[in-house]
Image 1: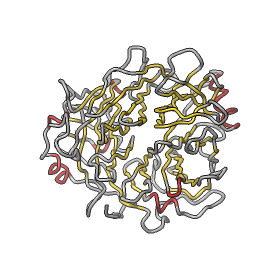
Image 2: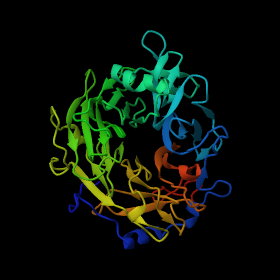
Image 3: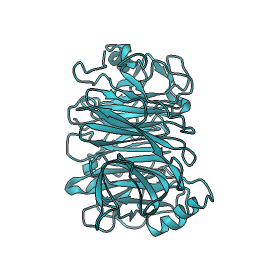
Image 4: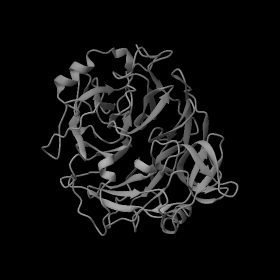
Length: 458
C-alpha cells in the first residue's frame, strides 16, 4: 500500500462525487438488501428484554471458525446480547446469549464494549483462559467488583481496577450516585489488550490490561481535561508491545503511550492535536502492509490514518506535551480524507462523518480498508438513515471513497454507523454496523471488495 499524504487543512481531502459514482455504479443494488432468505444484509433480532438503545455499542470475539458479536444497549440502563457467526456466511439472527447485565448483581452497561478471543479469568493459582469473552460493564461478579466480563460459556468475572478508579468511579457507580461514562476497546489480537477510559471524572481516568493479564496499569492524564478517555484504542506493535491511545476530544487531543512486555508502566510518547474535535473516534488495525497496527483518528470533519510503526518509535516524554499533527515525523501520516458521497447518499455536512471508525480486510489482501460511520447521512432521500463509507487507503489516491454500505429498507432516524465492528465469516471479514436510532444492528456480507462470488453476494 502506497504511503501518501495530501496537505491542506492538515490533510483534508474529500472524495469527489465523480469518483464515488464511478465506483458504485458497477455493483448490484441487491447487495444492500436485508429482505428475504440468505440476504446479503442480515439484521439481528433485538431480544424482548433489552430495554433500549440496541446497537449503541458493538464488539466481536473470535475463536476457531466462529465469531461472537456483542450488541450493547443504552449505557447504564439497558443490557446486551451476543450473536454467533459460523463458516459459510451462516449467522444466527436470534441472540445466543442475552445475559449481559440481565439482573442480579449490580451492573451498568458501558458506552462502548470490548471483545477478546481468549481471556485470562480467575481460577487456579494464576488464572485460566476462556474463549470469546466480552468486557462490557461496571458491576459485581462472584470474585468482586470492577469491570464485568462474560465469556461464551457464560462465566462472569470482574476485572480489578486501579485504586483511584475504584474510589472515584466503581464505588460511586455501585452506590447509584450518578450515571457513569465508560469507554472500552481491545486490539485485534486473540490475546488482546483491553483499554478503558472514564471521562467526566475528577481526576480523569484511563487504564489498560496487558495481553493475557488481569492486572491493570494506569494511564495518567498529562493535563486536566474532563473529556480525557472519551475514546480509547490499543494497537499491536513489534515485540508484543502495545501503542495505547486515549482521546480528549473536548480539547481536540489524543495522547499516545507505549507499553512493552515486562514493563509495569506505560510511557507517554506525545500528543496529537490542533484540530477541533480530534479524537471523536479511534480505531486500530493493519491498514499498511507491515506487521504493526495503524491508528485511525477522526475529528469534526476529517479522518486521519497514522502509521503505527512510526508512532510506536516516538521517544518518551514527560510533563504535558505539545499536542500537534504538524510536528509528527516523516511517514507518520499515511493519508487523510473527508466525507464522500455517491448517487444514493447525500448530506455530508450534517452526517456526523467519523462518529465511528473500524479497520477491516474486506478483500483479503492482507491490509485493511478503513470504515467510517456517518449516522446522519441521507440515504435515497431518507433522512438520518445513516451509512458506512469505505476507503481502501491504497494506490496513488488513498483518500478516495471506494464503497458505501447502507440498508435497502432504511428508515428515517436509523442512524446506521453509530457503532462499527468487524466479524469473520470463514476466511472473510465482514462489517457489523449499529443503527440504534431504531434499535437495529446490521451485518453486511458484501461490498465491492468481496472476493469472488461469495455466498449471499449477488
